[in-house]
Image (tube, rainbow, N blue to C red):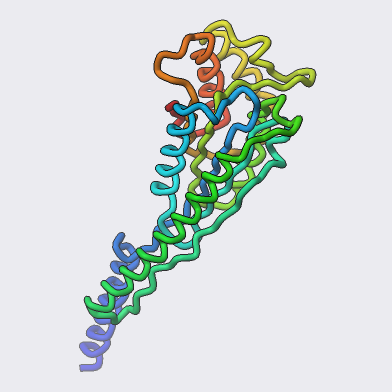
Length: 258
């Protein structure tokens, strides 16, 4: 009888543990992982944000970025301005506070009420975040820092974000025309890559010098300010090829151009 009783207790214990593990592995009970979003907003003189096409495209891009990446407590969004001193140009750092709180024994009515309260709170936060990023878009840069475009300086910023352990998403609202006057740096206004082959060669050589930055494997999106009928001189495909190759050489995940 004792043996039977012990066996029953053991089976009940195993069943309880299995049930608990099942709840932990159930996707519906797991909280979503926070997302760390970095927006690099070009404030150099080569990007005309006052142009109607650029304004509309970038406003829509910002709306989409907030909608796609702000979902849960701990989601972080930072805005850096691209110019001569990009790595020190953090303009915004915002973290979501809204949290879905539902008691384990909550009934369907309580669950629905908690979800509604969370959705309203998150909606307000999204609207506030969106508005503050749009304010940065609309703010002109009249300082001397706009003379240069140091996109490469975004890499240490990405590396720091990678250390957070969150899923990192990167967005460049820029023409991606690197233009730094210092020795050993690229100035694509003066000397752009002549074709994709040269762009890839330059990017691989530069990546070797930049291996110190552990950027992880973030998704990177380059949102360019060019109209569909822009000429090759305006929207040089070799320039974006350079960045696609450089980011991929440094370990980035999906790299796309819009």
